[in-house]
Image (tube, rainbow, N blue to C red; front, side, top):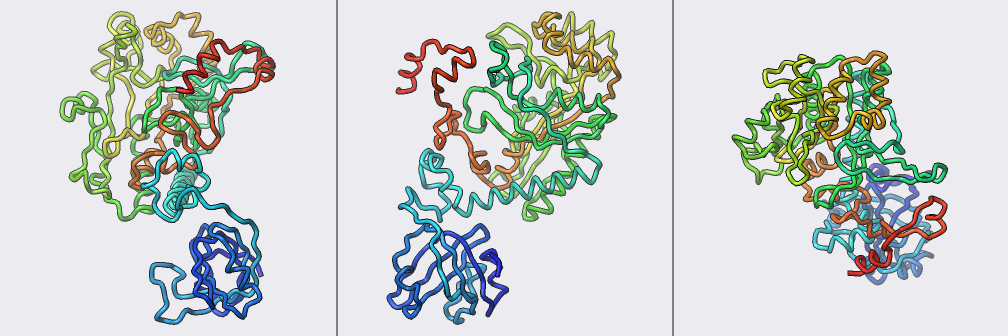
Length: 479
């Protein structure tokens, strides 16, 4: 006899089964006791009467205890069937029971949706919060969604390739999370904001079609809909134009939704292509919500925003920044990509340049972005100079990429849909934290692990690091 899922019992009437799980509920009717046993698949009712050797043990069990049960599956009397349970037509008559772990009283109820519970408390006990059916369903759906994407891309000849987590700090937009090196005092790794340079180097390597379910890290100011670490489907392709990439992502998402969320209605296929200028003029936003009825949670309105400006002016800092990232291919307003003309405009009038950036928008949320890439080192260096970097600094930070391009580089481009936001929308959740197993708070703290946290002086000394103003920092934390 082997362990089975609770849900399998409905097809095993009159058979002996071995079950494991948590006590979801106990109902003591005096001479008979019912246990609702819960595992990941669902709940099954187990029953024991006063003639059973384990009767007194069962009467003293507490909710959330962990049990092993051996028993016989039997049909329930018709008038006692429970249509709300998938196993509601059967029950398991307990023959043997073994407590595997006891449990204290839980700090909150885990059988409800949990929205009524203070989120900080839920995140403090996230391992308990994850017992609730809603969150287990969300994580199961996340698995199914990612599995579909993997299989879809695999069938098209894409290779899933992992790229390093410990990498180099480079000026790409947001702040890097830095990791000090013990072996090389005074030097630092950085956690990747995205696998941007690595996936471009994979195109130089001739791998042509790459993807990765990538973890990304950005040290940004806290915001409710962002996490310091997040997951994206990272895609890069050689020998493509913009429409090749947009059509691929459109087909992938349409098929995923039709297979996994058939109740959802996609308002328009193909997804509309809207220029940045048109989006701002018509909707006042570069992530417009195009739903016919925003109250209808099963309506999905996608669009691609294209033809972004290459640069935007950062007034407080008095400098240019890129709308997307420096590796995006610039183009002239007439769509020309003439190298000499682009360099001339970069030197004299960068604000008129457009770019080969594109964003994917769903129901008013930006859920992904990408671009065709600059593969000409002269243009790439000039873009960084517009951003305020000296040529020597560009070679110091990106010399590896520039050298790689000198050995022959295919034209290429990519896109990176954000998994967390897509699933938040598909699952009708109010926050990306509801579709992430162990999220940080909106203030970028992990209340369960109590991080970020201090480290001891010995560890800092090994790294050659001294924390200045620690007393002042502690007073700030106390507030």
